[in-house]
Length: 285
Image 1: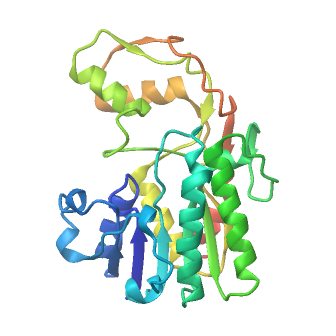
Image 2 (image 1 turned 60 degrees about the vertical axis):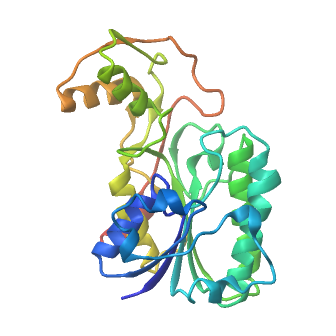
Protein backbone atom coordinates (compact mmCIF):
# COMPACT_ATOMS: atom_id res chain seq x y z
CA UNK A 1 0.00 0.00 0.00
CA UNK A 2 1.36 3.39 -1.03
CA UNK A 3 0.67 6.78 0.56
CA UNK A 4 -0.54 8.84 -2.40
CA UNK A 5 -1.15 12.59 -2.43
CA UNK A 6 -3.77 13.77 -4.96
CA UNK A 7 -4.36 17.43 -5.82
CA UNK A 8 -7.49 18.54 -7.62
CA UNK A 9 -9.31 15.71 -5.85
CA UNK A 10 -12.78 17.13 -6.48
CA UNK A 11 -12.17 17.89 -10.16
CA UNK A 12 -13.54 15.97 -13.13
CA UNK A 13 -10.64 13.50 -13.21
CA UNK A 14 -9.65 13.76 -9.56
CA UNK A 15 -12.89 12.39 -8.17
CA UNK A 16 -12.40 9.22 -10.23
CA UNK A 17 -8.70 8.90 -9.41
CA UNK A 18 -9.35 9.14 -5.66
CA UNK A 19 -12.12 6.53 -5.76
CA UNK A 20 -10.05 4.08 -7.82
CA UNK A 21 -7.00 4.52 -5.57
CA UNK A 22 -9.12 3.67 -2.52
CA UNK A 23 -10.52 0.62 -4.30
CA UNK A 24 -6.90 -0.41 -4.93
CA UNK A 25 -6.19 -0.31 -1.20
CA UNK A 26 -4.02 2.80 -1.17
CA UNK A 27 -3.81 5.45 1.54
CA UNK A 28 -4.98 8.70 -0.05
CA UNK A 29 -4.18 12.24 1.01
CA UNK A 30 -6.51 14.50 -0.96
CA UNK A 31 -6.60 18.24 -1.42
CA UNK A 32 -8.71 20.84 -3.20
CA UNK A 33 -9.60 24.49 -2.71
CA UNK A 34 -13.14 23.83 -1.47
CA UNK A 35 -13.78 21.46 1.42
CA UNK A 36 -17.55 21.92 1.15
CA UNK A 37 -17.49 20.47 -2.36
CA UNK A 38 -15.28 17.60 -1.18
CA UNK A 39 -17.80 16.70 1.53
CA UNK A 40 -20.27 15.74 -1.21
CA UNK A 41 -18.17 12.79 -2.40
CA UNK A 42 -18.67 9.31 -0.97
CA UNK A 43 -14.90 8.88 -0.64
CA UNK A 44 -14.47 11.86 1.69
CA UNK A 45 -14.56 9.90 5.00
CA UNK A 46 -12.03 7.41 3.61
CA UNK A 47 -9.25 9.89 2.77
CA UNK A 48 -7.03 12.23 4.70
CA UNK A 49 -8.41 15.50 3.35
CA UNK A 50 -6.51 18.79 3.70
CA UNK A 51 -7.93 21.93 2.11
CA UNK A 52 -5.50 24.12 0.13
CA UNK A 53 -5.97 27.07 -2.20
CA UNK A 54 -2.95 27.52 -4.48
CA UNK A 55 -3.37 31.29 -4.30
CA UNK A 56 -2.38 31.06 -0.63
CA UNK A 57 0.88 29.09 -0.90
CA UNK A 58 3.27 29.94 1.96
CA UNK A 59 6.90 29.17 1.15
CA UNK A 60 7.82 29.02 4.83
CA UNK A 61 5.79 25.79 5.11
CA UNK A 62 7.33 22.40 4.34
CA UNK A 63 4.49 21.08 2.18
CA UNK A 64 6.05 17.64 1.86
CA UNK A 65 5.72 17.22 5.64
CA UNK A 66 2.42 19.15 5.69
CA UNK A 67 0.87 16.54 3.40
CA UNK A 68 2.23 13.55 5.31
CA UNK A 69 5.43 12.80 3.34
CA UNK A 70 3.68 10.89 0.53
CA UNK A 71 5.38 8.12 -1.47
CA UNK A 72 3.82 9.46 -4.65
CA UNK A 73 2.05 12.61 -5.80
CA UNK A 74 -0.58 12.84 -8.54
CA UNK A 75 -0.95 16.51 -9.44
CA UNK A 76 -4.25 17.10 -11.24
CA UNK A 77 -5.10 20.58 -9.98
CA UNK A 78 -5.23 23.48 -12.44
CA UNK A 79 -7.58 26.42 -12.13
CA UNK A 80 -9.74 28.15 -14.74
CA UNK A 81 -10.48 25.48 -17.31
CA UNK A 82 -11.79 25.37 -20.01
CA UNK A 83 -10.85 29.03 -20.48
CA UNK A 84 -7.74 28.18 -22.51
CA UNK A 85 -6.99 31.70 -23.73
CA UNK A 86 -6.83 33.58 -20.43
CA UNK A 87 -3.47 35.04 -19.41
CA UNK A 88 -3.96 33.89 -15.80
CA UNK A 89 -2.67 30.46 -16.83
CA UNK A 90 0.91 31.74 -16.99
CA UNK A 91 0.52 34.88 -14.90
CA UNK A 92 -1.02 33.12 -11.88
CA UNK A 93 -1.28 29.33 -12.27
CA UNK A 94 2.24 28.75 -13.57
CA UNK A 95 4.13 30.48 -10.72
CA UNK A 96 1.74 29.19 -8.03
CA UNK A 97 2.01 25.58 -9.14
CA UNK A 98 5.74 25.74 -9.80
CA UNK A 99 6.59 27.11 -6.33
CA UNK A 100 4.29 24.57 -4.69
CA UNK A 101 5.86 21.66 -6.55
CA UNK A 102 9.39 22.97 -6.03
CA UNK A 103 8.68 23.16 -2.30
CA UNK A 104 7.54 19.53 -2.21
CA UNK A 105 10.45 18.30 -4.32
CA UNK A 106 13.01 20.28 -2.36
CA UNK A 107 11.70 18.83 0.88
CA UNK A 108 11.75 15.21 -0.19
CA UNK A 109 9.14 14.31 -2.83
CA UNK A 110 10.70 11.82 -5.24
CA UNK A 111 7.84 10.45 -7.35
CA UNK A 112 5.52 12.79 -9.24
CA UNK A 113 2.86 12.49 -11.95
CA UNK A 114 1.43 15.66 -13.50
CA UNK A 115 -1.27 15.99 -16.14
CA UNK A 116 -0.43 18.10 -19.15
CA UNK A 117 -2.46 18.64 -22.32
CA UNK A 118 -2.49 17.57 -25.95
CA UNK A 119 -2.67 21.30 -26.76
CA UNK A 120 1.04 21.49 -25.94
CA UNK A 121 1.62 20.02 -29.41
CA UNK A 122 0.09 23.15 -30.94
CA UNK A 123 -1.66 23.24 -34.31
CA UNK A 124 -0.18 19.96 -35.53
CA UNK A 125 -2.37 17.45 -37.34
CA UNK A 126 -2.29 13.66 -37.55
CA UNK A 127 -0.86 11.20 -35.05
CA UNK A 128 0.95 13.01 -32.23
CA UNK A 129 3.93 11.28 -30.65
CA UNK A 130 5.72 12.19 -27.44
CA UNK A 131 9.04 12.85 -29.20
CA UNK A 132 7.60 15.72 -31.27
CA UNK A 133 8.78 19.22 -30.43
CA UNK A 134 6.05 21.30 -28.81
CA UNK A 135 4.41 24.39 -30.28
CA UNK A 136 1.90 25.63 -27.66
CA UNK A 137 -0.50 28.09 -29.23
CA UNK A 138 -2.55 29.39 -26.28
CA UNK A 139 -1.83 30.55 -22.70
CA UNK A 140 -3.02 27.30 -21.10
CA UNK A 141 -0.81 25.10 -23.25
CA UNK A 142 2.12 27.51 -22.90
CA UNK A 143 1.83 27.49 -19.10
CA UNK A 144 1.66 23.70 -18.93
CA UNK A 145 4.62 23.23 -21.24
CA UNK A 146 6.66 25.81 -19.31
CA UNK A 147 5.89 24.06 -16.02
CA UNK A 148 7.17 20.80 -17.52
CA UNK A 149 10.39 22.48 -18.59
CA UNK A 150 10.87 24.04 -15.14
CA UNK A 151 10.46 20.65 -13.50
CA UNK A 152 12.89 19.10 -15.97
CA UNK A 153 15.47 21.64 -14.78
CA UNK A 154 14.71 20.77 -11.14
CA UNK A 155 15.41 17.12 -11.93
CA UNK A 156 19.04 18.03 -12.63
CA UNK A 157 19.61 18.82 -8.95
CA UNK A 158 16.86 16.78 -7.25
CA UNK A 159 16.23 13.02 -7.49
CA UNK A 160 12.76 12.95 -9.07
CA UNK A 161 10.82 10.36 -11.05
CA UNK A 162 8.63 12.57 -13.27
CA UNK A 163 5.73 11.34 -15.40
CA UNK A 164 4.11 14.02 -17.55
CA UNK A 165 0.76 12.73 -18.82
CA UNK A 166 -0.68 14.56 -21.81
CA UNK A 167 -4.46 14.31 -21.73
CA UNK A 168 -6.60 14.33 -24.85
CA UNK A 169 -10.42 14.44 -24.85
CA UNK A 170 -12.54 13.00 -22.05
CA UNK A 171 -16.20 12.49 -21.31
CA UNK A 172 -18.30 11.16 -18.46
CA UNK A 173 -20.36 12.08 -15.43
CA UNK A 174 -19.13 15.20 -13.67
CA UNK A 175 -17.82 16.92 -16.79
CA UNK A 176 -17.95 20.68 -17.19
CA UNK A 177 -21.51 21.78 -18.11
CA UNK A 178 -20.12 23.61 -21.15
CA UNK A 179 -18.59 20.45 -22.60
CA UNK A 180 -20.01 18.83 -25.73
CA UNK A 181 -21.80 15.87 -24.14
CA UNK A 182 -23.00 17.87 -21.14
CA UNK A 183 -24.71 20.27 -23.51
CA UNK A 184 -26.10 17.33 -25.49
CA UNK A 185 -27.55 15.74 -22.34
CA UNK A 186 -29.08 19.07 -21.36
CA UNK A 187 -30.73 19.39 -24.78
CA UNK A 188 -32.14 15.85 -24.48
CA UNK A 189 -33.48 16.46 -20.97
CA UNK A 190 -35.20 19.63 -22.16
CA UNK A 191 -36.75 17.79 -25.14
CA UNK A 192 -35.19 20.21 -27.58
CA UNK A 193 -35.74 19.50 -31.26
CA UNK A 194 -32.22 20.45 -32.34
CA UNK A 195 -28.74 20.18 -30.86
CA UNK A 196 -26.52 23.07 -31.86
CA UNK A 197 -22.92 22.13 -32.63
CA UNK A 198 -20.11 22.69 -35.09
CA UNK A 199 -20.09 20.91 -38.46
CA UNK A 200 -18.45 18.03 -36.57
CA UNK A 201 -15.90 17.12 -39.22
CA UNK A 202 -12.93 17.65 -36.90
CA UNK A 203 -11.15 14.48 -35.75
CA UNK A 204 -10.50 13.90 -32.05
CA UNK A 205 -9.26 11.27 -29.60
CA UNK A 206 -11.74 10.41 -26.82
CA UNK A 207 -11.54 8.33 -23.64
CA UNK A 208 -14.08 7.91 -20.85
CA UNK A 209 -12.93 9.69 -17.70
CA UNK A 210 -12.99 6.45 -15.67
CA UNK A 211 -10.56 4.92 -18.19
CA UNK A 212 -8.38 8.05 -18.02
CA UNK A 213 -8.27 7.73 -14.21
CA UNK A 214 -7.34 4.05 -14.51
CA UNK A 215 -4.50 4.87 -16.91
CA UNK A 216 -3.24 7.75 -14.75
CA UNK A 217 -3.00 5.43 -11.76
CA UNK A 218 -1.19 2.72 -13.74
CA UNK A 219 1.29 5.29 -15.05
CA UNK A 220 1.78 6.75 -11.57
CA UNK A 221 2.44 3.44 -9.82
CA UNK A 222 5.30 2.45 -12.11
CA UNK A 223 8.73 4.03 -12.63
CA UNK A 224 10.00 2.13 -15.67
CA UNK A 225 8.51 4.45 -18.30
CA UNK A 226 8.75 8.14 -17.44
CA UNK A 227 8.79 11.54 -19.11
CA UNK A 228 6.02 12.55 -21.51
CA UNK A 229 3.26 9.96 -21.93
CA UNK A 230 0.17 10.40 -24.10
CA UNK A 231 -3.05 9.34 -22.37
CA UNK A 232 -5.02 8.63 -25.51
CA UNK A 233 -6.96 5.97 -27.41
CA UNK A 234 -5.10 6.22 -30.74
CA UNK A 235 -8.59 5.77 -32.21
CA UNK A 236 -9.48 8.94 -34.14
CA UNK A 237 -13.14 9.74 -34.65
CA UNK A 238 -14.98 12.79 -35.97
CA UNK A 239 -16.94 14.82 -33.45
CA UNK A 240 -20.11 14.22 -35.46
CA UNK A 241 -19.60 10.44 -35.38
CA UNK A 242 -18.79 10.60 -31.67
CA UNK A 243 -22.10 12.38 -30.96
CA UNK A 244 -24.04 9.98 -33.18
CA UNK A 245 -22.46 6.95 -31.45
CA UNK A 246 -23.30 8.41 -28.05
CA UNK A 247 -26.94 8.89 -29.04
CA UNK A 248 -27.15 5.28 -30.30
CA UNK A 249 -25.66 3.93 -27.07
CA UNK A 250 -28.19 5.94 -25.05
CA UNK A 251 -31.01 4.92 -27.43
CA UNK A 252 -31.92 8.57 -27.87
CA UNK A 253 -32.36 10.84 -30.84
CA UNK A 254 -32.19 14.54 -31.62
CA UNK A 255 -31.64 16.35 -34.89
CA UNK A 256 -28.12 17.75 -35.13
CA UNK A 257 -27.91 21.42 -36.14
CA UNK A 258 -24.52 21.02 -37.78
CA UNK A 259 -22.46 24.12 -38.47
CA UNK A 260 -24.21 26.32 -35.92
CA UNK A 261 -20.91 27.02 -34.13
CA UNK A 262 -17.57 27.73 -35.82
CA UNK A 263 -14.60 25.44 -35.26
CA UNK A 264 -12.42 26.41 -32.29
CA UNK A 265 -9.40 28.40 -33.38
CA UNK A 266 -7.09 27.01 -30.66
CA UNK A 267 -6.96 23.42 -31.91
CA UNK A 268 -6.20 21.76 -35.28
CA UNK A 269 -8.85 19.99 -37.33
CA UNK A 270 -7.51 16.44 -37.27
CA UNK A 271 -5.33 15.01 -34.51
CA UNK A 272 -5.08 12.09 -32.12
CA UNK A 273 -2.53 10.63 -29.73
CA UNK A 274 -0.10 7.83 -30.43
CA UNK A 275 -0.37 5.61 -27.33
CA UNK A 276 2.49 3.14 -27.74
CA UNK A 277 4.17 4.25 -24.49
CA UNK A 278 0.87 3.97 -22.64
CA UNK A 279 0.25 0.46 -24.01
CA UNK A 280 3.68 -0.66 -22.79
CA UNK A 281 2.75 0.49 -19.28
CA UNK A 282 -0.68 -1.13 -19.36
CA UNK A 283 0.75 -4.46 -20.54
CA UNK A 284 3.77 -4.26 -18.19
CA UNK A 285 6.26 -4.56 -21.04
